[in-house]
Length: 361
Ligand code: 1CP
Image (cartoon, rainbow, N blue to C red; front, side):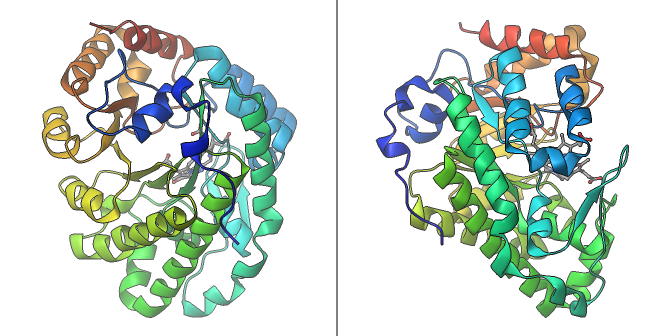
């Protein structure tokens, strides 16, 4: 059962947390001197200290389900760089694993699941027993919350139903998500049933993370952009409307960040219909368009090119400056447009933090 627990409204530390403050204050409140910052996939293989723990844990999911180790890798990038937010170390594919479709991570490769190829494949899913897996994650959240510096906000997360469904149907990452798109056209009722189950389980899972101590939640719809607009509305936007309503019913004050990656002009209606407190902006969105069309609607997060962070140098300096100049008159959280690339030299992130924190005019 979701629910319980005090929310951010009663959090005495709110004023000490720049990231949470920006997300909870209205558009008229004074802005911080420099934007709060965190990076998608900030805990991960580009950090030598992560690689060490990952090796000791013996497998990626073992790391996700071991609260002590998961807490350790969540906090590593905070200790190294002092980001304003920590994101729970876990993965979006914990949800199918909890629903009864086992997930494996093979070394050097992405995730693997036994694919659901037709409606009969849905019969293996059992939404009544997910706590067996989710409880490990909630324990990680509690532990992280207890160990984080007071000024750091803790972000919980899940994958959006469509993005999670693409892995459940294909059994792996694919370049174009064709298997799930075909499934949705061929078997729309069964696809709707899967999306509905993922909506309910995501609400339960996000509320569990919030009860355990997550102060903000983000929903990653990494593959939303492969859908035509009417399918996007049906399989991405409407499910997100229900997730936002479902979480807010129990936790009305916890900010929710949506990330419908690369959907271009569809961002505007997505913000208006879902009522998210912020949107993650991918690399392809023009900065002035973000400022003029999105920042007037909600808080914007993004959108440095991860490849530019990998490359570093004067182009990085120039672009960081331009992002901050363009978005600094409104509510902006500095982030990448997608996850950090594993070959990124850790010192490029150090330089990025110097540029952001030194940007006060
Ligand atoms: O070998 C390793 O160490 C595994 C690499 C790795 C990591 C570090 C995976 C496998 N997942 C994660 C952690 C993770 N994943 C986090 C928490 C850490 C943080 O952000 O600091 C988060 C938020 C995710 C989210 C995630 N997983 C997304 C959505 C965001 C995005 O990048 O688009 C997706 C699509 C996944 C699936 C996934 N998990 C891992 C891989 C390699 C993939 C992509 C697979 C593919 O499409 O081929």
